[in-house]
Length: 442
Image (tube, rainbow, N blue to C red):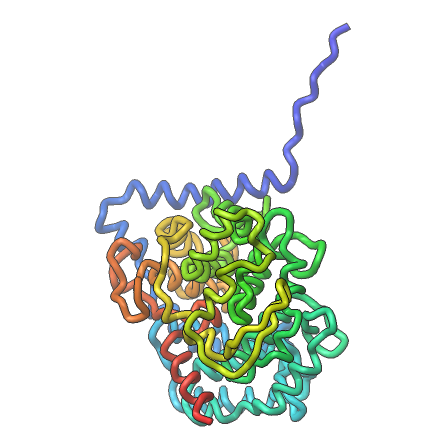
């Protein structure tokens, strides 16, 4: 008796993947069959339309946005940062209104809530600080109560080394990054805040190589960026297994040319930054990567390159490395500043032109704004992180901070060029330097 072989049944996930591939490849086929002059038009960054969409959103939002009532500082940051990337600033009235609103979100006991009167939260604190730095100027920067904010960060610190997102909230890598990023950019980062953060993040690096939100969870693009950036800011990047992290990271760019956030997930425009933004961080720590490749067991152990990222720093804070319990002098607040002064030591490890193609052809809305993928709607979140990823692609070939962007780094004409960002904080570089000067005056 012959047995009939059952054909494998495609899963829902496979069908979703095929659908996205079909939509993306249809756009690429259309683009590829156009004459060069028409391709130039199709690949153009719709700068004016983006600016109009963003400015209109900052002035007034549709009632449907009431569901984001606890995320209003995020909306300020996503919109203001997107405008800054486009080289645009807001008028005096909008600037004043933004500062006034975010001041009302600031809790008297430190930190920022999702709106006036709401409990302070590390995520909205990060968003509010980045928004105020993006606005710039003495009025915006002096509105930040750094003394009370430091106390709030101390209160969120957990014995595990991590941070809670809010009072009684979850402890994860995102909380570590938002706390350390804010403290660093405000010049208030010290040993107490840094204590055991590296050990917590190290416990979140998974067997795949990426970083999860908490120990035992799945590697994820957003948490990987947060983990890598934090480890650099606390001078412990050598503790991660960087070759294994790179191996996971490079395979997140798929045939659609964009990045997925996790293994076997769909492409999403926001990971243009959350995944793509890790590469400019790795470009500046090549010596540590090379050492780990030569000494495979070096990741997570004390190595001769432990101070590589902090090389040449002068400061008074003493840092106890959790891996080898040795003391070295490092001023944590100088790390972010010195990091962007370091030369880029290797070419991009992903296809940056392909990612720009995905952003401009598949995520960009002609009428303004960016989206996750074809078939979905634009929003301010994806506009912010698609543009941030586009900026990363354009500037990661430049050897020095002030180097001109090379033609080979740019998809389309120079009219597509965006402002460079500080890769650790995701604020426009010029605004970072203004804030750095303001907060180091003391």
